[in-house]
Length: 534
Image 1: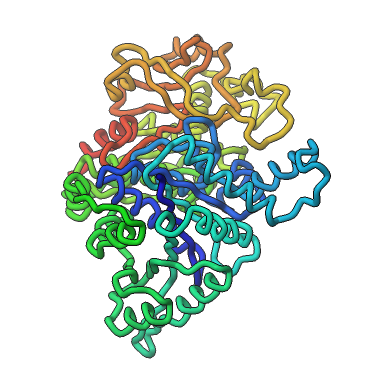
Image 2: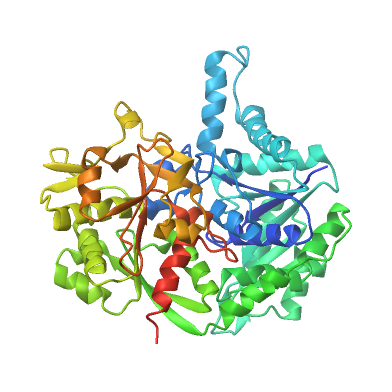
């Protein structure tokens, strides 16, 4: 029977519940158990696909085409699993399903209410994932902070679910903050006590308390938390700030968190195999060099907007025994070529990530032009590839009015155009080309050598593509279209093989990178950049 672990947060938001959930998943996987993670988000949006990255960070895309919360990226990276539509649930999707049922008459004229209809729908999402994946452990993270009005239906659903599956089949983990007051030199436990009190008022007694803190928790404070939160002392887990999120599983393991859960759930413990992870942490802690990489985008004020890109660069750095120093470049500041040159003079590589809209595009084109003309290792992602094609068309092919139809519907040379199947799309949510698609790589190309194979599958999220009317003209001028869709109709990868590394993809390789298995395109970029470090 599947065992359920519910993870909630209190005191403040952005505590890192997702990292705790992912780390716990890692510890269970290291013991040979099958694990699946779910994220329940209380916001009314059906999914984060139409939300600004400034609002909610990156939109993570799964193989089956779900636009999800960025925490699913952490789950996949830590547990090395592929998740999907069942793994991200929002209030919007729950209410939409219930309202659709009401419109069809499924409730036979009954009054539709939060209890039982909304809570039943939430519980059905838990059971649906259980039936599909049949995991040994199912970890469910509830977004937001205990006390928020919007998360109450999820908390009530958990209360009901725990009662239905019975004692020994579900456990609640509550994450809180222990603030430190420098004037008194104390870690304060009262906010955590109040948070647990609120959770209890909703009918849930947490069995484990994970405390985020900047320093070690003294014995007296740990005992106080255990006493007032009705927990055994070994169920109060310290989670101190660390230099790398990948250290968290080992910190939790040192405090026997998995064994505490096994004891509560009546599961026989197993010895974990964490040798590979320990070696990874040693590499992270002891880099032999530092590689500076620029990320040129328009959401640079919020690093979470590009979190998978950042993590993928780090993964490739680990493989090179290198620390990655990210230089954030707002592409709007590169509208002048001299400014772009100044911004890039002290980096060993540059990434132009995905995005939407015309803002900052000319700056991205200047960044790409500098990288191409100065043989600076370059990786373009989605919009980054489209910009690489536009820049090449303008400055090498000689199509001076080249642009994307997304930015200029009347462009003289629309080398990037709306995909045919997107022509009649009216709604924005969930209507892009989403999810995993196959790609055929040109034999002997830089991309094929990086992957070590010629047929790959990668995740997409876009509406526009290279206009095939200009494909031959651009290719004849030297830009190699080294990856195409199986039917030959969609350009997936472009490259300039004479340069050290100039590769761009229409897909998002960052979604499939792992800490101990860096994505081939990111590894290729950092391999080339590493040669420039003295």
